[in-house]
Length: 349
Image (cartoon, rainbow, N blue to C red; front, side, top):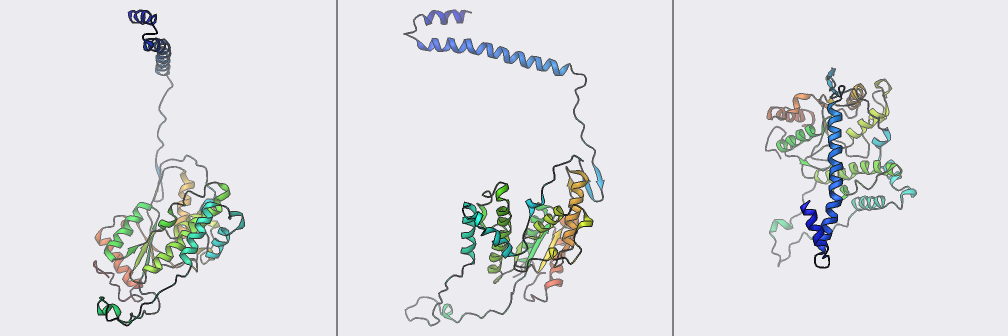
């Protein structure tokens, strides 16, 4: 009270000290609001402590469904198969991209430019094979270029799996111990466009963007395959399996083996060998519906053409013995096609 009295006395001379007037107004407004706030907090504490029926919701009991561990049977809203659609040919993809109704979409315009720049033949300037007298280059620089053998001379390896982090770790271990070069699935030139196709009206363009990444990455891989082996992850296979598993809600509805939907696109770079790391997943939500979808994905992968090499959970730990087993497997399966590649040598290539 003494403080309030002193402030009131000072405000009589407000021309001399305006700050005191502001402090008085602030104090008169703040004290009631603080009192109301503390009263509400106190009432809430009394209310909740007096509730005899207030209890924490018990955690669901996990259970096993085959090799799958299901944490919760809580239902989740099923996602539409259109959100995961992929295309089986480049023409089908470009027909959607060049549709007149998307001609004014900024992301589509930029994506067209990237694709045209990547596929337009570049003018090549050939150097003379005759060494000028004034040249400072060594003699071997002006020799005739070595003729290339017909066909591809280096293998293309694809690593897929049910668990993203584990398959990437396995891919890096194989890359380190076989001398392969990794190629990004999403090239840097289109990475900034990944958020440009949001909304239901642009959903077809978003699926075109995803599918076109496979063809752009394949162009990069083809250039590198001229000199060294290539390893990749996330190239079409996982996306197609996920789409088919969501399109057909029952395993009995899946097309029979040999159906065209299981065929690798004819105009997309085909891997020489494909590893699929099948790891039993922990289903945190969705219950049996999510477990059945996972089993459909695995079944679709097993029906894919060309056949996929299925790896069990023992390869999750990509130790040196497991990597050696994979190198011997690659030598047995594709060693005759690439005899100059020493898969069993850690310092290969």
